[in-house]
Image (cartoon, rainbow, N blue to C red; front, top):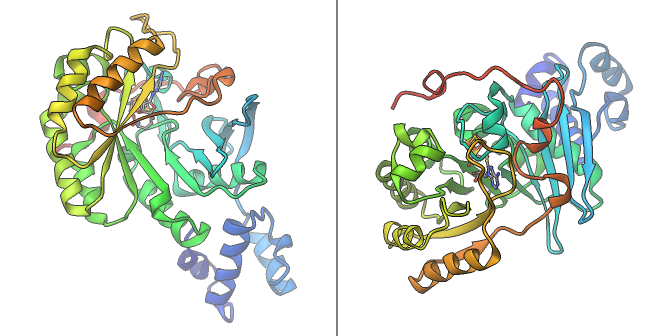
Length: 348
Ligand code: SAH
Ligand code: SF4
């Protein structure tokens, strides 16, 4: 809930706005889980709130800690439908990776979440709740949030926007420290550009060729490369912000030199960064493999010699399968029902 929504809930309470600000601070900044903890509220208010409402939280289904300090949680909010979030401590900052949906309907062939199907959207409380849960595990403050867990954020647009505003207004994070990653939902990229939120946008590109994208990511049949890139150009123009292109390297499928060359050509002149992600192992029908270091190096060199800004995803949490959807995928009784793509994609 936003502060205004909390004030509404307080109704006739004197100084409702002040009380709402206090409650928001307890929940979002101090991680309180009970009204009883909110010691600067009058005792009778604490009691009456506690009788009618609860500070909803998430429950942990499973927890995994990696040897490199990465903590991964499978959580739920009462219905046993698990979704994942990951705490990523680095030397200079602490980041977290959160989910926007239970499962995902986009069906990308390389993705554990996509192979498991779609169940439901998360609400803004469940999205921000993942941060609050992870903050409890972290001695250092989490300053960065990336929407790269389960689900396609732009197909849960309203809840994701509300969660971004909550992170800014109540948790106190900077928009510049928030990254939303999308598979390429073109109309929603345009809509996001108009929100004028100075967040980072990451686009999961994974190949410059429609034939390859079509095979890997069914969404490309609806919004092919040319349309996606023109939405990206509009986004950069409207917001004045760079875009990050996520590029998954799958051996012989996306890591070939001709794709590096074509990628460099197709994004020429667009202010952007290409982030290379070597494939994290997921059992796929096609038997996708992670490329050798040498192949990654060669791909990177082609981009760099064409003047492209390139980074490489830091490898974390390998021993706990920290890739998208892998924990939920190994949880018995997980999400299930796969819905067909066209029922969930907005019409453009
Ligand atoms: N649905 C959004 C955000 C969640 S996925 C999107 O697709 O962008 C976050 C990132 O993880 C995406 O770039 C996705 O392509 C990548 N990813 C999925 N499966 C992966 C795997 N097996 N190995 C490495 N990265 C993977
Ligand atoms: Fe969904 Fe992203 Fe996985 Fe594709 S990569 S199935 S869009 S979560």
